[in-house]
Image (cartoon, rainbow, N blue to C red):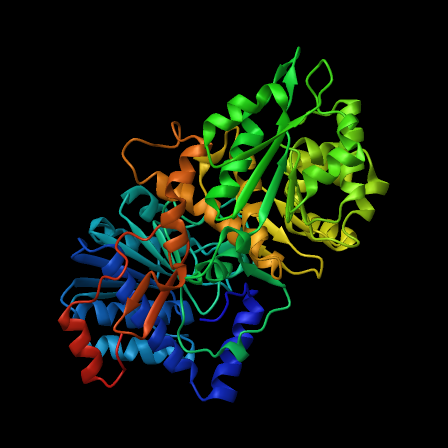
Length: 570
């Protein structure tokens, strides 16, 4: 899989049609491959499930479920199927799946129900080990029919783990939120070829750690075309996983200058620039200098002896002043630097705002502007509009800072996150990182990527400072590909936080921003596009959440079955 594009429901239908018409893979074969992916993932993610009930509709989503049910039964699982509706009116491919299921299923394991009373007689089948939801797919449009609603309520009441095929039934087409009447619950979701907007922005599973996976089923990259211009930050991880040269030296990987902090009679913020500088080091930058108030230098130095320090003049209240802009001092400070990260912990005093404006105006270094730096620039729109004209500029606002930058309310920003980030990025010619659940990276050309790593434990002070440093550190190493460097930093930051919660000593309450840096090495070594690989053909990209048992193969029964039917290896 070359890259992950987000497709609308209509674009996904076009992709399937083009795959069949131009590349010779029939829609029935795509359904067979989807079913094999569902069966394989069900066995991998829910290895203890021995009794499965598959809930199916009569569309193509139901066809996927009918074929998957047959495969699961022939692999040795006790499998029951409930068709919601009379056994007619199928789509063409689903009709084939129904016929094949009837020919192979043991007597009494397939049930077609037409009303809630009939469904009630099958109540026991809602209390097995696993439920597969293949009732309604991406093309669903509200309202949900009463029979499906009845099934949904039974699924919710059962508490049994649920694997949703394509989407949890009831999600409206291309919607990022459920309808008021609700949706089927899910403990995992498997979709095919490419994620849709709901997979990106919707809370599809019962918990954030539960997986949403994408399985390629044979559509070539040429058929996967989208006008949404929305990708996935995980694709950028390959940029930072290239082996370093044996002859490498620190000069090959850039020198990051972190400018920030305050320390005086009004207290101080020495931690913010410390965390940013430490993160830049951990990201692999060859050298990192922290330019902070002189009184804060011992605190910063204690974080890592590898950090270099530069004392900054401050006003009595502790804020960095424009006295630091004296040419001789600036020449010494900027000598040899390759990336500037500015803003963490600076405050917004008048003298500090003057210093930040002067520094950004006189240097053309690639710059990451964060925290107080953003708030200062929000009050200087003329300066802001000029900063990206001849440099790489990265802005990293949270929703409140974004609201100030664009002159909107936080609610307006949150209601239109993607559009807001894109508009600012294209207007300024900057890379905009709009932080929050599903952090967005918007680029000057109007493209954007969404991040699917990260968790609620990151909702505390310091997380943004660490991200600022990671971005600067990767920019220093990959100046020719700034957009991908930023995307990789965002992905790694969230993944390191996710990996941190695997340790018994941390949970969503106790994890600190700096704790995530301990897992950064594991994050660098991860391969999101290869978490599941069964016999070399069927792969699963864990697009969101965490997969339970990556790499687990199906048992020999299912492998033998697929070989016997000539369906190819799983």
